[in-house]
Image (cartoon, rainbow, N blue to C red; front, side):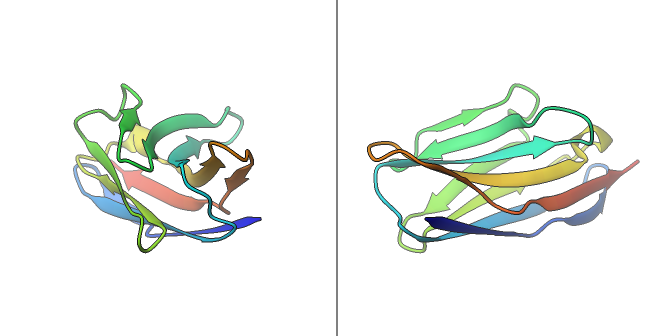
Amino acid sequence: QVQLVESGGGLVQAGGSLTLSCAASGSISRPDIMGWYRQAPGKQRELVATITTDGTTNYADSVKGRFTISRDNAKNTMYLQMNSLKPDDTDVYYCNYRRVVYGGSYWGQGTQVTVSS
């Protein structure tokens, strides 16, 4: 099992910034892929960004140029720096961890991000 704890959500005005963190613990196995997803009430969970063990990143078109995903493998922690936030970015943000070789996908509890106009 892998446990994921997110932090850093909150309320921010449009144009502002927030940084989310996700700390992983338990049966960590490299290589792996960590990612951020978001979900609004009544909608499907959607990809925000992913990052592999070696730092290869992938972003949703809607956040390219505004969000930056990063990780610290020594601390088993992933980050999402969110700049130029828009009201449309308001969602619950979830951290995800996937083992590439041994399988398994794990989710954090989610953290609310609210962007006011």
